[in-house]
Image (cartoon, rainbow, N blue to C red; front, side, top):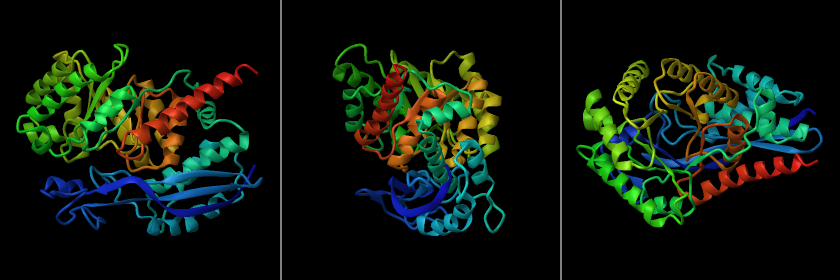
Length: 416
């Protein structure tokens, strides 16, 4: 089966681009937006609407496959590419990608994905990762359609893996509404909760981190009050975006002691802490995280550390895995470009006994959420992000239901 055409449509994503530098510099909330001027390249305001490009691949039998190009909420920070603007990138798809794909045989996803990854722009640079991400989503869907298989089965076959026979645990994100959205997660028995929005040091965590500890205590009590039975034992997942750097000024011993307090307050629930610190440089960040992991091990602190910021490429992820600088690595697919890169990152982490979190962003789309569900199941990831958006219900429904469809379809297929 060959590719007949590639068509683009301008779309919107599931959330917004937020200029984190401006927020940390004092941009104040104003309703759902922020006051002040942006401080990061290519932002036109501190908060602006997320954008997407829907990529549609037309197969020669008339069938169609979809993928969505989108970028993360905090684009342009922590070494990431700048914000993704649809009108600027649709011409690049039409000029550089469409001609390279027309008449290609849909026989091998990895081959096609590597072809997209190898394309360079007029300056000889790699294409924006959002482009590579969305186009390779569409290619995975197209190969699956051409072979009349599920996308998870294509992933498992081509990467020598097995499709998971159980649901990959889902982590939901609450955004700023850390109380009501946590309630939603508990009522729906989301396995990993609530991420939260603790992105601004002292403002969101407290002068000595006391606000965050108070929230963890509230969350523990809330689960006990709202859960319908004791069998629901969620894992607590707090995303700090480096906020402890502003609270403890990167003092490693104070940071270790605080993480110890977090684990104690969360008990008996297990706790995952994502990006506790952020040091403004990729090499310095890696070195610090390696030391932090060693100290946590020496102190036998019952907390698992997830890394995301400054871990944006396959090479970055390999470096963190080699250094054992995290318990779990957030494979943030929109940052890695081709989903072939993100899949290779998962396999590398597994080989190094590092946990795998197929994540992404609230600023993705419905299509990328569905495709991510297949990839996580095809690779037996340790956890997957419910996306897009920050409303909990819609994102959790989308990922949960697709995973359940995969399990049901594969169970039925085994009977025939």
